[in-house]
Length: 163
Ligand SMILES: Cc1cc2nc3c(=O)[nH]c(=O)nc-3n(C[C@H](O)[C@H](O)[C@H](O)COP(=O)(O)O)c2cc1C
Image 1 (cartoon, rainbow, N blue to C red):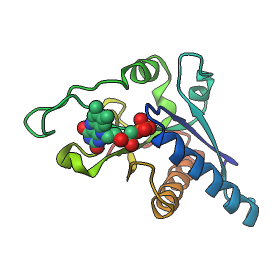
Image 2: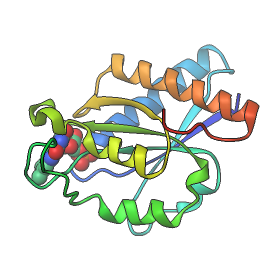
Image 3: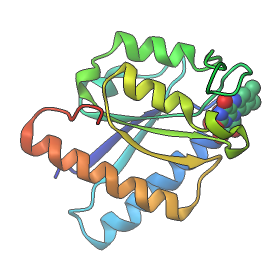
């Protein structure tokens, strides 16, 4: 297994950043217990971000910002995360091993919908969803699923498609 899991993320109000920090901290604890457990390298997107993270296998984390609607009949208009999406469009999504999404369950069918849209857009598996700043249980689950997909990539040399 690669010794590092790369995570590229965007955070508008800080929740995704907090969860990224939680994941990094978790990976450091697990790596200290057993060096075979990979560290997480998390890079936040902004206009100055070093986008070379997309030159290697990587995961993304994206919150959901949709303009109104219910996510079933309407409410698909993405706002605030579009610059990140443009950056991904311009990058090498053959290296995009999976999508981690978040949102707020109050949005019902729209919960985490942007991650689902990106999974389709980039034909990459949905690794998992967590709510707001996330918790330890969600972090453990998502860390485990990322490891599974990274190991699979290390063995096969090609990413898995959306299932
Ligand atoms: C204008 C606005 C629209 C939002 N739309 C959705 C939505 O459609 N679905 C959802 O699950 N969460 C929605 N959210 C909640 C955010 O995705 C959630 O607060 C997330 O944790 C923000 O991540 P960030 O702090 O990293 O930007 C919305 C929040 C705002 C302010």
